[in-house]
Length: 223
Image (cartoon, rainbow, N blue to C red; front, side):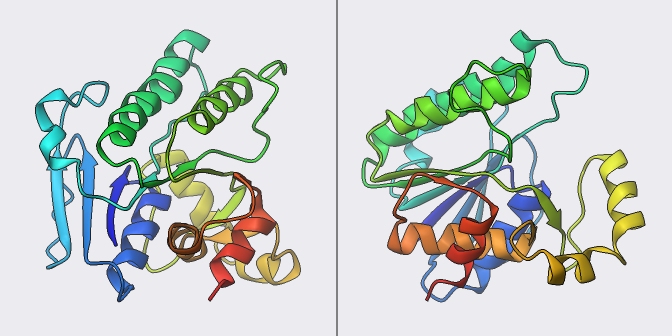
């Protein structure tokens, strides 16, 4: 497979790239973002692109891919609905509508979140916007559009969040997460499980379009 990864600097994106590099059936991984990652690996190509709402200038570098793992996202804290919509909905659909035209046989995995509101009518702003994003992606003619809704994540293999507050939180809770994950394996996932689940869904598909944490866990264990 040839795989595109958006948001490769984030925790989930880092986990996805790591699992892709370890997978024998992944021939190439191209990251897309505003800055270079500096990864040196024979499978990795980096596409640095400043305007993530417009891909006209780089379309030739976005064709020929079997899967896209879309891991871009921001916290809604302190944001207006209009600003959060531009970053969450508009940015995602700009990429997806370009990719589905260039790669109609692509599997597109969108990283959403637990609590997303598919009705788009709930009280929580971020949940409505993510629900609208998921619903719009389902209408695009990809081979398979899927939405992953992780909750609590345990970063592995030295992976860290780019958000300072989250880094502090993960540092403080690091001793607790392994035993808690053993007790609640369907609620707490690792970055490695996320990456493996994305790859397995790209390889084999999945019976339904929205994967909650227990589904992601099962997808990670699929052989």
